[in-house]
Length: 178
Image (cartoon, rainbow, N blue to C red; front, side, top):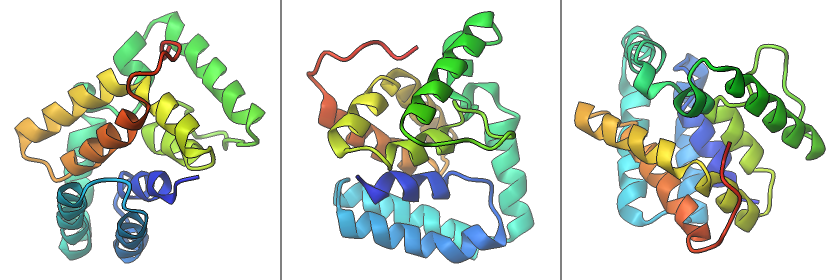
């Protein structure tokens, strides 16, 4: 089980003073596990510096503008796959059942396809299984990473790290991510 997933989930949450306080610890976990290459860890360090050194209100405004008001950067993964179709609801029910089968129970206000929730779930699994599930979402994560790169966002580092973690399962024939 990789703590890196949990650390990345934390860094991808809405900025709060708690996040500003905990971000360096998350980076230390990522550094200690060294599951992502050093250049990506340096980029994550720049994100942590931006989070810890920024004005909390400016950080919150930028986060909201980036992830909540830009549909192509929504952190709800199935929105990218299914949009607002009925299939999205069915896919979320299936994902919630997968969580429950692995003893992860969501609160009433958490959507199962919210990327930080998904990453928290992956942190509870053996690394190979986590990488394979993450690999099923690679097409969405890669597209989001490119959009963040175009915008010059430091959050791009998280998506680079996720691509690296997913590549651990590359070449394996896993079922399509619905």
